[in-house]
Length: 598
Image 1 (cartoon, rainbow, N blue to C red):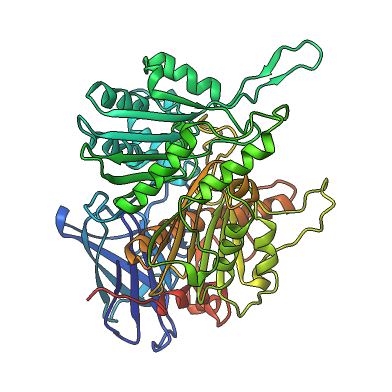
Image 2: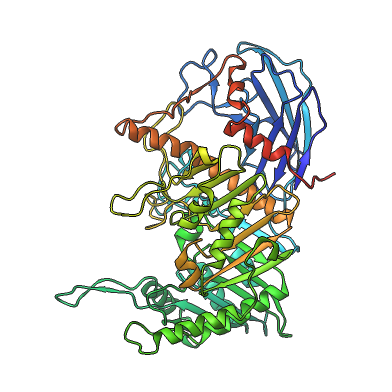
């Protein structure tokens, strides 16, 4: 939801709420900011009868000259020196009041006489009866919070009940949402499922229990034979993935073979879906579970992921039709299949016949449009590039496997006055020394800002050394950013959200089994995705800049250029909000916001 305060002392506060995150911006253009030290922020939670000042991280050197990882302060004495702020500790379905107190004076003699700016907000419920519910895992095992709570230890190295608390903290109800989706199916209902990875035992057991309870459960799994053998001995040196682990867990849980469909055709591609369709016993498709989350420990507890629960019978019917296309295991059986190309072409024809996909922004209907792969041509990838390039104020995207060339082509002619674009990547975008293709860089000159999966490898002032999902044994290949979603003008009156299993790449468009939802005009969905993107991007942005700085400093733990561990003792920090700066642009994305709650 979206909120704005009254204007007080020339300040106006804007807020956007998701389920667990509240993002704020303060419009200061009409205020007298001379001598401003920052803002003390107080939160009132009537549900828990709490009223307190939010915790801060930076401190005044004059007050705390030697901060370390044990330092704990609040914004009462060590204010937020920013006109944008996020509260990541909110709870779903809550009403809160926030008071922003402008502080002036000196660090040891603070002037608190200015009146506070009050803004009342409500967070979205985690589970609702609305068309959409959206569930993000924590996605930040590389964090100060995990270091404080669980000492950077692997969950499996913790004793109960702390092990379970660590898993719950990392999942943040994503696993619970999956289990609830399955549990809604009753005797006589149907669950049609498609999974790339089918190796998270609690969900597999829940589907087995549903089957035992009389639910018609049918599951397509990726069972492609992509093993690697030694060319001389013929011995297997790398097992088929995820086939081997999928089949092992099916055998372990006693899942009936009759309920499992092996997707083995198109062996050079992957059955990358992660969806379930619930159909009631009357034969009506009721809901779809989709998103980026693989059924694995790492998918749920490690890398960033999202689950999307959609209650829309038309969309569910389209997913059912797609499931039936895949259930016959269509496509080429490999390079030795004489009719392989013909079969692949027919597979794409069947997939594209399920429903007309938009090819321009004007074609995108209000509501929900499912899009399935594999399909012929790159029209969908071109449309995603157009969405990124044509935003009025803000575009955001998460990319697990690099930036597609078409995105770079479209945004490379943008300039500092273009709309703001944020790219959240698994790895830093940099030249490949083995590639002969010229490298195209997107950066601040194009009004593009990038963050990538990274963590603090060494202590830095009051920041302690961190870990990562890979070091915790949760993920092997993608340790940080695995979600796949795109936002076009998420705070506008007509936001567009694209979310699903596809990696915004050519293979995910023309080769793999994939699904995406294009959601237009739903402010609630846009707000949830925006606040979570905001949380993740700026968590990793600081770490990305620090990592790049340390690399330039021959591996030493070095702070980013212009970084200070301390608050400024005067109003000099405001210079960072000069017109045209990234910080000022972030504030302006909120001041252009539409659709406030009253």
